[in-house]
Image (cartoon, rainbow, N blue to C red; front, side, top):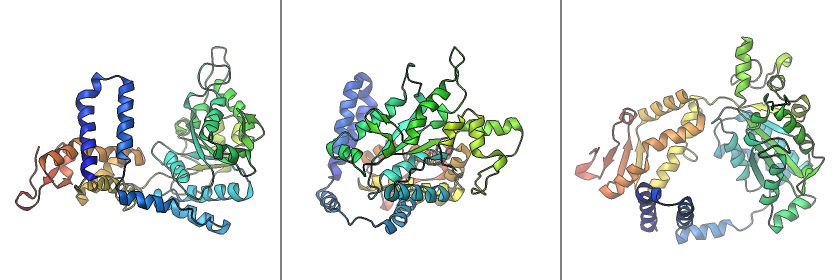
Length: 393
């Protein structure tokens, strides 16, 4: 299995390097589909484990749901304690008591908004589908571009098979809709006639958030909305006023100055009062600490380096990293201020696919990531025995 997988990866690497530029986009997509199918073929033992895992588990009781969901969150996501608590309650009340609470996550790129939604989606006992939609291209009905109805078309498509459609139309047929980049429709944007385009989009979403209408055949009362956005203009607003940040912050997340709350600030940058009023709970995500960044990089279960090392191990290779290098990478991630996404991008530079190729072709068993690589040096490749520690450029 490992030999076949290695051959496939090597062929794909060669194709990307030498052949892709000569082929059409259609052929490129076809090649990627073939690669995806082959790379998902696991050894027989893994298949047997998956078959055993597919046996239905005992359904969680109402009392077990919150602790199980929180445990799942902690295993898959670092930090954001307040957000995890709030989402546990929102999902619990929605699942067991039909209470719809629209929640808004406010946090910069890389703080984990999308990752949190993926974590919720992967929770086996959730019991309903999760649909994500990027709001950055939304325009009012009748304008050129995407409109509000496209959100519900996607919901309908995601639930198109018979079982899902039954769940959507039945008494317990619920769905979570994550509206990402919601801040893109919460700012001042006027057309040539001086009308606020974004205000119109917000108005068109009001009834859906309230769950009082049918859109594209979807009953919005069965949808729980979670919103997410970076809202960089709030920071600009604070700078313009020449004041220190008021409201949620990483040191005191649970305190809000009612004279100038985060909700008021969202209205000040273009949020319609009625639209913002439909959002029952707003959570300002805390900035990741150094310890959080280190965990994102090195956690034994979900760390970016851990996942990369497992990928190498599948092909019989060993990936190591020196401790001082970990600290240097954490400092670099902190400087870039792009959170978890930055951790993945930086590590990919250190464990680039060209090094994977060098190891397989050169017969090396181990690669060490060291601090000198920050200055453009090559990694340390080790065959073992007499060649231990030998570095190639």
